[in-house]
Image (tube, rainbow, N blue to C red; front, top):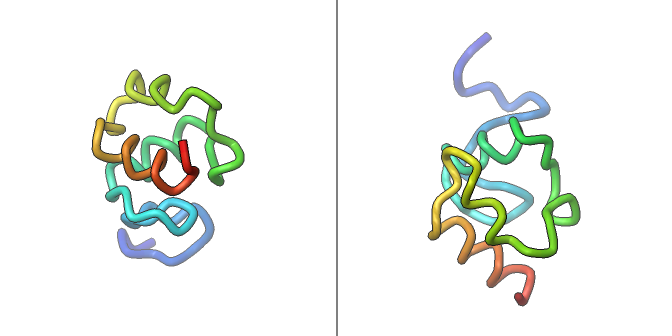
Length: 66
């Protein structure tokens, strides 16, 4: 299978319509998150997930209005 597959679970730079980057998207998918609704109320908890950095968390907070 190609690294650039568009199949379900694609690890592109966009997570549920938020462009957070490929590493952060992959990390969230690996941690079991599939959509914004799956994320914890306190998004700062995500910083403990390898690949999810402060920039990704800020973008997610902005999208969710938090």
